[in-house]
Image (cartoon, rainbow, N blue to C red; front, side):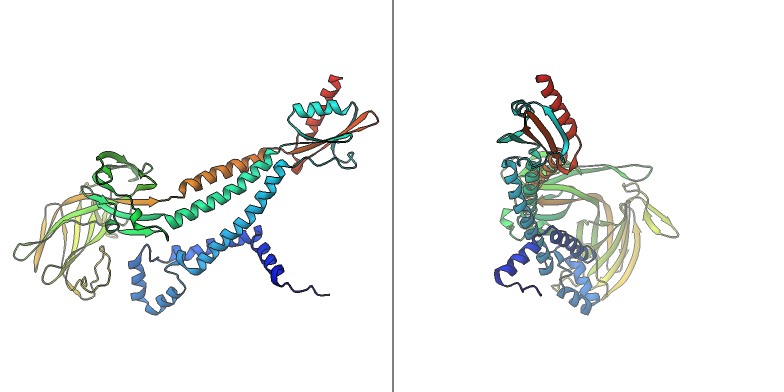
Length: 483
């Protein structure tokens, strides 16, 4: 005989049970981890729009198909959102019924004694009465329920409280993470020493707001970078300490405050934190045309490529005729060998050197297509010079000159707003406490039945945890002594 087909309410009830099962939650959690892999393999539009553009330039057809499957916007894709939403519903559906079950168990009276006690743990028959047994059980904090000539007692109800706290804490953690995701924001900005960072959208190099985050909610703080000190181990070149000295204003009319930022000691403005994330160097250069007129002057941030801060960057001078671009490499402590060529042997400024390759032609800055400030498209340009400069030196080329004036450090500030972070942390702490309670609190039951002037005593330990027989023996001994 075949089973009848599920229809209507029965089908929906079946699907709901399947979705809210622990097995389904674990499968969805695994799928979420697998779905996150493309986000680490391919550049994402919200973080690296220029690298995404490079994909379309190098392989337009392949990039078009990748874009159809949202590989450049994994975390905002419909399939990733569907997995995340189903996981959220599955966990909520798992947690709430179990929480209600544990809540009822907390106030539930102990189960009555079974018909036969001799098969239970620690079974004993002694001379005594129920009054003595009841007195001992109450003095040892058992919850009791009397029924005729029998007593049912239970201890360790706090274990059920731990289960309840653990499951409810999972919901708090989920809501906290979701709140940070949709109402929070993350941004990064490179700031040279001596410059100011004003918390407005235009000052960010990269800004990723949550789906329901409003730009108007950005706190109006100002950070002036006064000095940056980095200390390195001379034996292995590893960093020992970073210290950033800043002056902050928590609002336009607020009083300036001098503060120190370290890697694990961020600035705090309400629910917004500012972290010291990375550092590097900005060569100070002056570019002149053939007549000696200054066409560009100032610091240019270069991006580190290794632990010794060997850096690359680009200097673009669109105001010259023809337009001039410099592809540069900066070495804080210049060294050279036959295999690697020029490289930096130490991250501090012991012997700084600026290597520049001079190009003339169209920089494509007027095309309307965004481009990286750290790279130059040399497809329609011609190289007209190549030189290495020390601080204070100049290099003259066909249509002008470049002077290497010095170096100033830059720092990368990461601005993070996680409004749900405190709730997620609070929920995680409660979940750990609840889990520890449920693991280490021993829940056990003892039944006492009076038969013909004698009492039967036996018990049951949940999960067969040890210690119940010792407790029954102690109860028996104290009852005998009290006679």
